[in-house]
Image 1: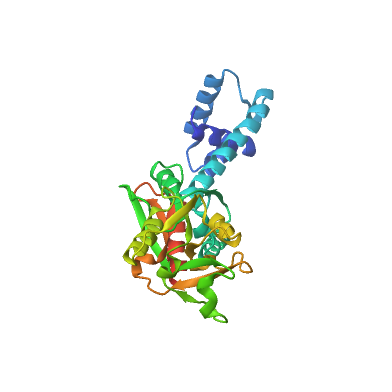
Image 2: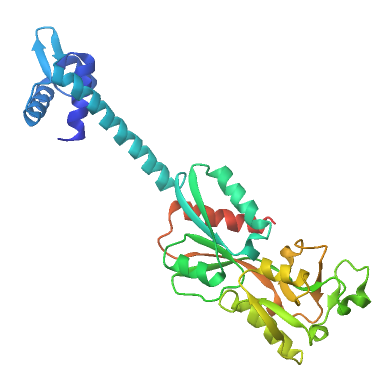
Length: 305
């Protein structure tokens, strides 16, 4: 049984006449009658009672008409959904992000713009550290991820730097290094002023890029930093600094957190290596239309910032 047999049957049932149905189908009447006969033989019962004025549905034909219409409608709907999926206007998309990446205003702006442009796409979110998200994208468990500096660059992945921002030191309010900078909107502190401090940094396996660069910058400044605590998320280290447990460093876009308890400072002797990039990670091959739309929109939004 083929879909065309169902369409022939539905048209004959609607017209109640083989000749009129053949005209509507743009075919000859004898081949149409033969197709319906073949369908009846396959089903094992008659669909129509033939009479001089046309054809009327049998009891079995009445039931089969409902089912045939439902099948054709489902096929049509499936084809429409498949077409929308092939265009990227419908489907699924999974997006991951680190807490520090999500803190940048570009990320919610991208997500809002994507939802407005493609509201029929179901977007799922996942939070993790840079290592987890990169692995998830590589293993096709995640479509796209936003993170800071990549911790690794496995083959088969694309890494798009959306922007670069300043890495800021985070000191508790009242810290001795701030004494000479009262009244300044953003003090500028040399790393050497933190020689004897306890550093609170994101774990190496979560963000080794910025972590390692900061440690290296301290070594270049003449001291090995005392890393007293390592945490999983950048929001956690800001909270610990606010509690007076030590000092830390975060991207500039995170400076609104705990602003009553901490002070965000520029690094006076910072180099380009101490920047805080915002990176989008996706697969090089096998990108779905929804992924392609999201990538293009993200790159476009990053240029408009």
